[in-house]
Length: 251
Image (cartoon, rainbow, N blue to C red; front, side, top):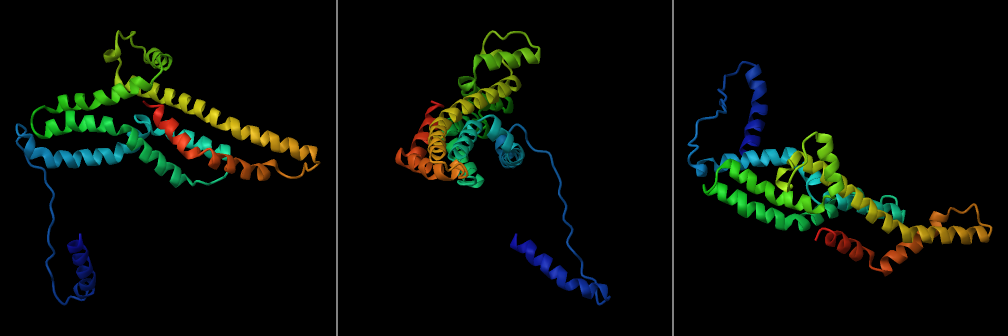
């Protein structure tokens, strides 16, 4: 990278000289080509495959992260928690997204470890072909999604797809399983969010009743109840309880 920056700087300084006709400096020609490779030896393709996987992961990472992992449930519950506390932008979106991301990595690590051991490494070592590697990589994800998907949501997506009733989990296509999994995650996240709202709602109602009894109807109850909600959340060690419950809900 530093080499190309140096070349660009030199070319920038030499451009006026070229324009004035003081000499012609040949510039290097850069070509990019694709040649044939030995498909029978996966070791020769390991670098190209890694680059291909990297590009694919960068383009599809948001969809995979949100739709096929625990990220959806975690980020929705954390958003409910912030709204329940009524702390506006505290914690900020960056903090909530970062916490949700690392919790997702923590929850999904055993699954990603299985994918690495059963799919990626055997393929790079030449022990399995590409189709078998893809099959081995999808199996742990499907097992995780089936465990978190409700039968009612799965039946809905099977009905909407127009396919016949599957006999077992192996007959359910992945494109049918993913939306059913997302619907189930959203329902679970809203249920947890409702339970988080209840204690904060009680505090708001108590503060509003006290203010009305004192004749202070012009004072917004949220301003008075906010310190009490934050104090309650800190005293019960709320972050420990919320994170522990979230991670435990995937076990």
